[in-house]
Image (cartoon, rainbow, N blue to C red; front, side, top):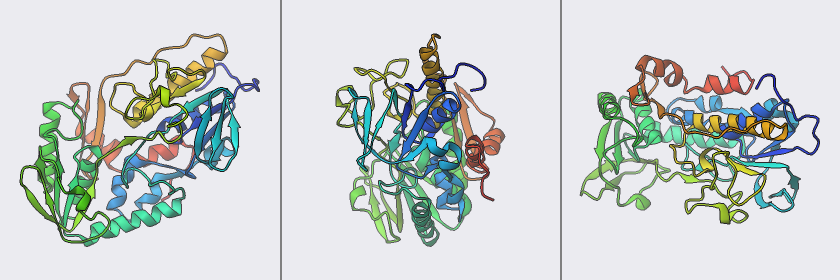
Length: 374
């Protein structure tokens, strides 16, 4: 954050950040050399899930999307799982039995989903992630007819990755809506996206819902029939579900139930303060802010909250968060990409250079102050 107010001399200030995703690490970086803080996460490393889709097709890529916390944050990082919050005592309880006291508690727990976008509970080491990722890669390599269920950003990008790297595969993408990726995208975005996917050879089945998802094997190569509510039947030997992202509320589910929406997100005001609490904040995907949840927005939350905490404790003026214009970038294999800002399409060559080339892994390593593996 450069020059400005500092709270390092204040021993009564301890910002506790729960969750080391994009919001959590940005807040920790913004507070570094400005205030005493601790970042807590069950994993030993940041999992750059924006790049996870490429680990399904490129051998070894998974090692480029795991950045260890310790070299960046040192003693300010604690590996652990928060199981309860005591708002009266201003402490959190870890699964190990340890309690940690805070002056400001920031919940940045993000959201959960299926691998590879999200890591299963208990998968906390780089070695375990590599093993899991290599297993998925082997399934993709062995399969001939691959059906991806769910046409959000993850499903769409995985379909493009496979179709780009493995021309011999039959790739089908099924989505229950006619609009892919995001409802805020323009008609021009949708038209161009579908053109690129079809040129790659991806078969699109839109506006149809898979009815036998629970019966389909997703962790083995095995012949199966995917059925939809419109009567469509598609033969597959590998099914990749990309549905069901949920707010990760495990750390506060019981302790802050009175401050939660039905979907598990926390009710916050424009200063990220959690409703009905004092000294507790939430940023990123676990908030109920009415905007599409994206990594760059999580970073914006974090940067503003850091400034507000410093301002609040040094007599300055806090600023309200105001959602920005819609912006989205989509990697469509290493050779294609597109995006939208506001109502305008972004230059495709720019998206290819910034994201599609290496899924922005270089940027995350740089932002964490570390050198990416070759």
